[in-house]
Image 1 (cartoon, rainbow over the protein chains, first blue to last red):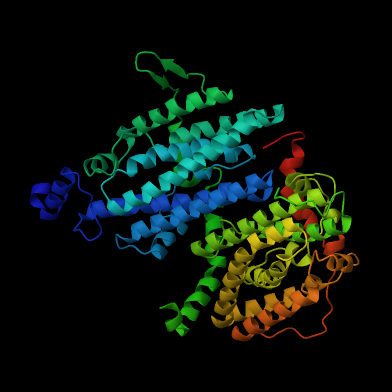
Image 2 (cartoon, rainbow over the protein chains, first blue to last red):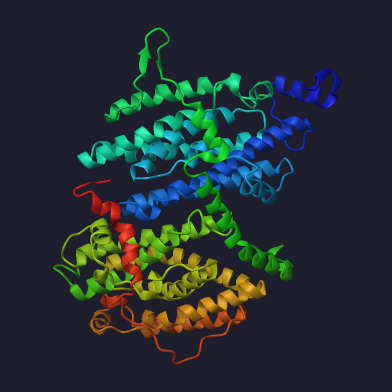
Length: 314
Length: 262
C-alpha cells in the first residue's frame, strides 16, 4: 500500500475524510479509492438488476391482484435503484455500458443471495422480510460513507427498501396467520432463506480481503459480524412474533451480551456460490444476457433514430 | 366501491356485466402479458416503462372487476373473478391474450390497444353508469400516457434501422386481424348503447382510425390491406388456446390454497 506521506493526493484526501467531509466526483481521488468505489457501487447496481429476476419469477403467479401489483411495483423499484447506482458509479468515469458488460461477462459480481431460487410464493415474502431487511442494515451504513453520490443514492434507496421490508413482513404475516398449508409454506421458505441471508454480510473480517482499506477510507463503518449481529437480533424477535422457527439448533439468547448467538455458517457453500456454483448462477446470467442480446436491435434502433433526429433529442 | 355504482345495475344486469367483463378482462390480460417483461426489458428505462403500463392495466382491471361483481349480482370481488373463472368465462378481446413476442410486437399491441382505449374511455366518461363514468375519468390520463409512449416507440422503431422497421411492420401485420374485434357490435350492445351506458363502437373507431393513420404514416409503415378477415370471439368466451396457459399460470397459487387469504 502507498504511504500517505509520499502521496499528496492521498494525503489531502485522507485529511478531508478526517474532518468528516464527503468526497465528491470533481475531487482528486486516490486511484485505489476510486476503484474500490466503482467495484462496490457497480456490484450493488448489478445486485439490484439481477435481484429483479428471482422476484419477477412470481409476478405472473401472485395469488391476488393486490399482491401482483405490489410485487410488480417492488421489482420496478429495484430497477430504479439499479439506475441510481449506475448513475452514481458513472460519476467516477465508468459508463453504464462498460459496467453491464462486466456483469454479462461474469467479471463483476452481484449479491450471492440472488443465486438461490424462489420456489414458492412464500419466498417472495422472505426476500422482502429477510433479504431486504439485511440489505437495509448494510445500506444504512453505506448511507453514511465517504463518497457523496453513493451516500445520496443510498439515502433514497434505504427509504424504499424499508417499505419493501415492511411489505415482505406483512406478506409473511398473512401466511403465518393463514391456513395450515400457508403456515407450512412460510416455515419451509424460512428454512431455506435463513442461512444464505446470514451470508449476505460476508465472511468475518479476517477472511475478507477488502476490509482494512475500506474502513480507513470510511467506505465501511462496521464489521461484517457487527452488521450480521444487528440483523440476527432484529429478525429473531420478528420471527417469534409470527410463530415461525429460526432453523438453527444452536440459536440462543446470551444474557451477558444481550445478543442472540447463532450456530456456524457454512462458508464453504458461500464461496462455492460466489465461485459460480450456486443453484441459479447460470440461470441468472443467462437471463440477463438474453435480455441484453434480445434488446440489442431495440437499442440500435433508438441510437439510429436519435442520430437522424438530433433536434428532437437535444 | 364508488358511490352510485350499482344504481342502474341492481339486481343483476347481465348485458352490462358482460360489457364490464370485456373491459375488465382485456385490461387484466394485457396487464398480465406486460408484466411478463419485468426484469427482461431491452434497456433498463424501458423495463421501468413497460412495468408502469402493466401496473396501470392491473389497476384498471381491479376497479372494473369490482364493478363487474356488482353488476352480475354475484357480489364476487376482483380476486374471485380473476382467479376462479375458467377461460371460457373470460371476455377479453383476443388481441391482448396473444403471447408478447418481441419488443416490436409488444409495443405495437400497446399502441393498437391504447389508440382504441383512449377514445373509448373518453366516451365512457359520459356513461349513464356513474361508477363506470368515474372509472373512465380516472383511467383516461393514464391511457393518454400509454398511447404517447407506444406512439413514440412506433416512430423510433419505424425510423430506426432496417431491422427495427421490418420487425415493426411484421408486428402490425400480425396484430391486424385482431383489431376488428375492438369495434364489433355484439348482440347485447345495442340495448346498452340505447341506455347510454356505452358508446357506439363506430364512434370509437373513427378516433382510432385517425390515430392509426397518423402514426403509421409518421413511422413509414404500410397499413395492412383493407377487407382482411377479422378474428372474433373473445367477448363471447371463444378464445385462442393460449389463454388457458396464461390463466393456469396466473391462477395456480390462488387455486392451490383453498380458503386462503393473502
